[in-house]
Length: 374
Ligand code: SF4
Image (cartoon, rainbow, N blue to C red; front, side, top):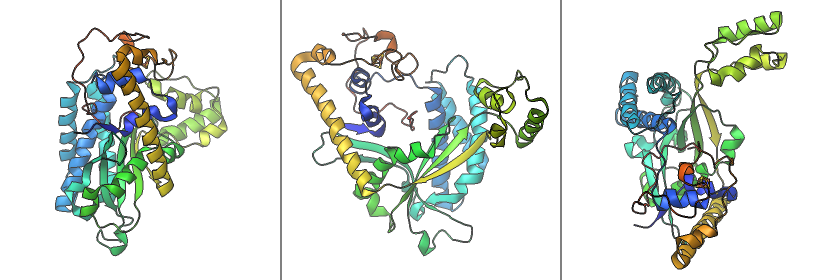
């Protein structure tokens, strides 16, 4: 089978940020980083959503929430056995809070969608695009190719709902800006797959250009309730400050400080509280020019990889290594937390002592949109 690259690998090369050594160890030697709690949770969450969408395709309605939760929990526990949790992470607590987030998704977002043509094959669509002139195929997965119910009055099979919608379910604790999502390469990859993959096109009747929706499930922890927020406004107006109580989590401290702390201003208080679990929908589209841009990016990324392969082939691994300029320590991706090779790397010119496994053409076992992050 031809070699393939994914969006997450391409993304590392955008803007010249890729560390070629990290790329080589990870993708060519298959030294995958240990799975993080983010991937463990994201994978379990996606399994539950996929089950719900397939059920909707088959039965015309969502499954009961309890069944989804069970799928989520079963998958989480299975993934957890292969996950490296940080010292301050509690798997049971992650599962509990994300179970609540799943309920928000089930109640608010899921009823808006069903797989296009009520076909379960339109859930989690894997694609493998062999593109002319490029040595590596483009592989990936579309979460849902669906119909979207714009209002309760419009039935699923109304002619005007014949448009397709590509949906990407995202999970995370951060709330990416709309600008980030509009500039992201991932939707362009999906749209290209939709437009040129004959298998996808053969089974859907979509006449109108798709739109792409990110349904981002955001779980920032308990946060403030509406009432707590209103109380905070009153408190701030009266006393101007309030100490941070012991039970406010570290990731909420800055919100708390904005509301209660000395640097909080009236302007901050006009902001709505950070609601703890919600789904934010962002709509984006991609044009032919965006697809062309992706084509150019793919050519350049392949050229970079080919060059490294050529040097390796003719000069050996050390020659390739000597052409590589390491990122500066402390760079956002070159640190103990972000790079799985940090412990044995630090500018090494020889491979780490462990025997290298067979070269891999596949991605890490869990390909839920990595902390793209995806
Ligand atoms: S530790 Fe830094 S230099 Fe080494 S592989 Fe990782 S990113 Fe590259």
